[in-house]
Image (cartoon, rainbow, N blue to C red):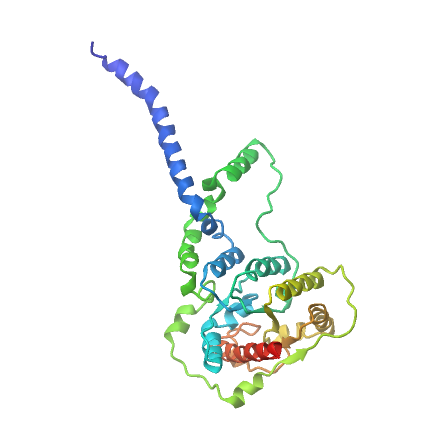
Length: 333
């Protein structure tokens, strides 16, 4: 007995919702299966600190790591550091620039703790500057209490479904960083978040790197003192913890104050700020290489503040490679 047309239509209407939810379930399962082995990548796409931390972990063994704010991001070329260091030491070390904008003390310590454990790491250079030392939160993992049923439902889905937890990672502005993690061994960190990267790569400028010029970039060293520093200060306690962890992991830890000019230079060379730097040196038991109070021409900056241009970056990277070399020899002796 044939089914009437009306009966067929009724059956189709009943089957459609079942088919829809079946296809939806299959899609979710496929994404979940895909995300299980890829969770490390997709969980680190939406935040700059997490992205660069993941890149560093994914890289081949890397011996030199820079951590800092936009001043290090613009002012350090890992390629030049590696070339200068390898030329003088006759080794094959690689460097990575982990500096990003929007840093603060919490994000600095998070990044350091997550990267210092990587096998093969020899030296970490941390930027010391007011932007790096400011108050702030991590900016992630700070889930608020649910305000209503919808909030509670979203949090429940996020904690049980990877596709829900990593949904922001599938936005185009975040998804484009997947190759940066997967191919991290071919990136040096500077390629991300830095302006003028293409013009800098295409230009073939030759700069004066004579000994006479490089010698003008001699930092003033801030040495530890015997003074006892009271515990309980958030900044000093963080540097004390990082120093202890570096010692535990047998990693050479260097502190560098980057160059500044004009009003920025005056603001960051007050007695109060220099006293803070002195205390950081004391609690960490390490000298600080201060390039912030030496006279550097404005022509080496891309702004009238604290961000180096290509010429400044080439010179700064060259002198820092020599500092790293010297610090390692001191440590060995």
